[in-house]
Length: 219
Length: 340
Image (cartoon, rainbow over the protein chains, first blue to last red):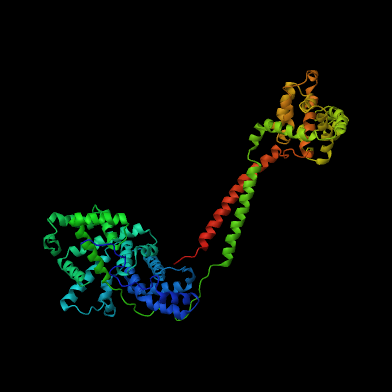
């Protein structure tokens, strides 16, 4: 029952672009020198993560696409402002800032959610294939994901941003603090509250609770 | 609801499940505990916090349930894989890169340098004139007393013969420099003007050296403690004191000039008590006034008007320093590279 202190990325694969990723560092060095090919390699490596972040922040695939493209353009233009450290965090910072700008420009909450995007046949990739489980398990997991995605949109924007960066994108607290521009203590607070809210959603449905329990057992 | 929750089997009474929900509910009362458990789950606790949380987990099954739920949420969220990008966002052509404007950086450094120089000037002005004009007036007598000491010391180094020669002239010349309306030819030629008008002639080196030579050796010929008395004997009366004090408050003359009169008046020689003070007081003032200009080692000839001028400049320099520092700060913020 007692859970020893775990690394912040526990449960996640080794995050792309983390400090120490030699391939990324090499590409970053080349891109800083003006090598567009190297930069495009970085783009291809991180574009899914960046697009996922902006989509979950904005809820609108078209806006997320625009913001993602703009984030990469800005990253190229201002590459010299990257002073080392985690390239992924730096890239997330640019994208998150652009997404926040877009949210401020709208002056309202996102008009659509991932559920709407999922209804789009072209957006079927939002449900990643999950080989192995039975059909019943697949349905159960799909329901759980849908419930969580819907619950994410009940969170305040700043809570959602933190929980997406931490629990979906796999950034640690310090990286989340860097990306969001708030202290680590604020990250802790927002993340715990967001998790508490999502936990309520799961607990309110026995089916979701069971699905989550089985998901835990599988992992 | 809680009774149907399979994970609540063994969690205790329904009251426990309410407590668990309350723990996990934002604004539900125990946000701090929820935050501790969440941070513990991610390994973002200090050693002390970790020990406290583990002790809490060992003692409280509700805390264990909440921790399990938080872990479950985290796993479920991690299972929400990031959607794929709808297309490639690779750049077909390299957009122009932004580089910090070198001109703005140079301007920033220039502003910093200017701020430093003005700050130095401000500090210098403060050191030179730490007192306001009013303070100078109030302390004129004290400063003058020091000036007398500095004046008399070098005077003693003058050749005794020359001092003796000029000693007698002091008493003769002094009235000629008097600014009183005594209609002597000398006073008409050089200083036959009212007191304020005579002030501008004080800093002029050429004419002041002669009276200095005439006056200072006079005191040198006598014992040092007597010399000022010799000079000041014509100003023994209270009227002379008043005149000297008045001159000290006038912004034009050197504060050290009139002070000897004020200092010396309490000890007038008995034989000079009947000397008309009206004629003599300005002349003594005049004679001593030239001393700082030509005698090395005396205090700087800072007049009251000079002090007032410096105190006028100092606030302006201070304000200018602040403005330049503010401008440099603004430029620094503007030139700072932004990550996004």
